[in-house]
Image (cartoon, rainbow, N blue to C red; front, side):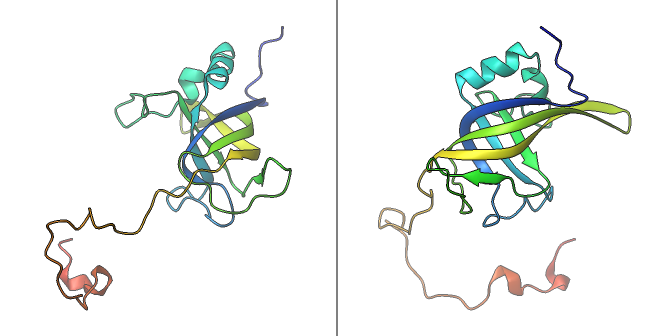
Length: 168
């Protein structure tokens, strides 16, 4: 078997659970990176495939201290433009992908080098939303406000604070 050439890119198909998915026109790109991206918590077979390629430890998301960010193997898949997303009935999917949804993604793992640093990035080309979880937000419940003295609505919002009031 030939050694994978990550300079040219190696194609893989991975499956996992989504976190912070911004892969569709509805969600738009990530505001910080400007890329369409998603943290994907890999299922066991996908983690084993990346391990067999010898890249799992290089593409796993790490925090600022260099430790794995999540309790399970997770990779960040990204693209400059929205990748083509599908439903399981092969229809185009352009809506929000909620946290906890299951996604299968056709990706390209490619080596990069910039300013003396080297690494691997995982780029998503296409994906299939295998299961879409419900949005985690829910309206305020009675239990949330139990024991709270409800007051009249205020007219000032955080957006109305002038720049002179800011401590920086």
